[in-house]
Length: 407
Ligand code: PMP
Image 1 (tube, rainbow, N blue to C red):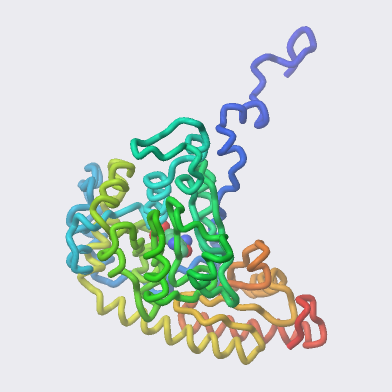
Image 2 (cartoon, rainbow, N blue to C red):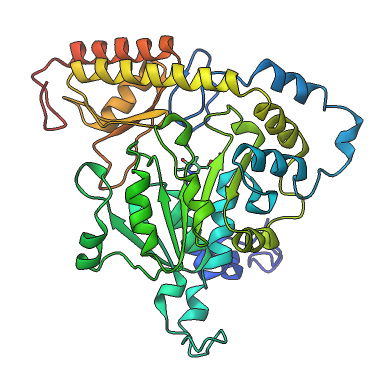
């Protein structure tokens, strides 16, 4: 439509570039987190988002079904009180040590908001606390983590206006020794918040509790040990969160307890840290059905423990079989494996497997671009993956080496 004088009508919809001036620069510049795809394709073998291949226990499904009635009009319990009490019993601590979140992603986001001073404030001249700390103290606005790890961390930090300190893991994605970190001066022992994923994602390695304790003891800021995958590992570091006032452990019901859809995560740690997170959360952050499902889950742990065993067994077999096809398979203590495929480059494998209706995850970032992350599914899914990998190798033949490596 044209205005009578031939000029553009005044009411034309605002373009993105004009309207974006209202968006904070930090948000304009933000590269949002990219979650794995959730396509709806019949017969797809979905090994891209580390979901559990087994459903929640029948008792959990029944509990959720019987909670779907007129009570949905009511708000849920605002503090997830019963669940916190049950989790406290499970971890032999007090409910004051526990906070439940809308997935552990919410716990991570709250930790950034609670413990990290936005850089815009910290870099100003004003003193912002009563201890005489200058606003120039960079560490107080630093979110720190090892790389590669969970790609949400830099997004949370950037969105908060925090400084980011991503420090490369050592060879084979192992944890660098504290002395090496100190001498390299890359790791900030004063950082306001350090996020350590263990077992790590996407590498899959678990860091020993002794090594974590050694590192955390030297840290002056808060450390969150992100144990999203810990139920598939040999040890966990929960006792550190109950022993040290600056350590929090973040857990989730998404992976081990087959509850991605209902979004239940939690933090365990010192009540002072828990209170800080709690102040910042949404009023009703944990949905009612999620609370019901998580409570029922904790009443049926043998069902889940059997699933952990099955997944770990499948992980072992899958790792061996892919290794015989010349995949380089990193040792994993999670419900996924991280592999460097032979002959073709990783994105070509992603495509070739996708054509065979198998979806895995590839990250387009320098340190991990040669790898694929493959969720450990059922035995049948793992078999289908190995069969597809064999087919791909037969199709391309050992001679062609786009990835620079031959079988
Ligand atoms: N931490 C890590 C390392 C993860 O991979 C994930 C899942 N993407 C989460 C935390 C968050 O899990 P959720 O929000 O489903 O509890």
